[in-house]
Length: 329
Image (cartoon, rainbow, N blue to C red; front, side, top):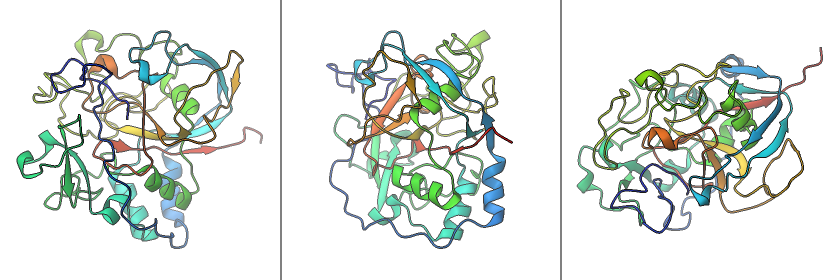
């Protein structure tokens, strides 16, 4: 998975962009995703609808003029047009996901496979969990970690209902979308929305990472991966509306948790304008956008890309939902 914020640390691989998030070290061992019971109740459907805002679509330059990390494949910019769509103001919360699980009976990938990856500083005793993916020792494989027990069996989400749900695979996000008649945004839709009114700026709010010294999103401060000074107020995840929204009302489009997109990961090799691009027809990794809480402020940009296998689950993976809509009366 491509992600950033630690390429200058001793633990990162010096020959390539750092890989801060875990990668699956073995094939899937759990069973197939369970079938969903019934469909979302009117109440759950109304809760989901209440998070959506309408975006009329338009034109923008997708990507960066110069790639900070070659593996991102985010340059040169591409001319893109997206049609009208709806996007949630914030990522799906623990509370909303819990309602989905209660109604559908769904069992997540992490629950079926017996565990997930947790960032080491969030564990009471990191040394009690010695399994770590190669090249990313700050991630620890924790038996029993899942969306409802983010740091393992002795943790819960009772005080984190308004935090983004984590430890969800792309398949889990798709199950939520199927049940609630929503979908994941395409990568182009996601970046169009993240940029908001700042179509050519680095960040959803402008070109300065911390304008007037104020933190605009939940990212890393300090010496990665052993010290986070928590200047932005959060060591792990933050509430989905903890920081000011961008100019069109969308919260935490960068930082906090990576967000799954619909697309397979790849490049857009064309000089023509792309209309509603949806990425490659196939692949092995799905697109992630937005970066997460363990990235440096300067590295988490509107154009920042990530990717990983659709079955991966870890503490930094969440999602927000989208819907297509017609502007006609």
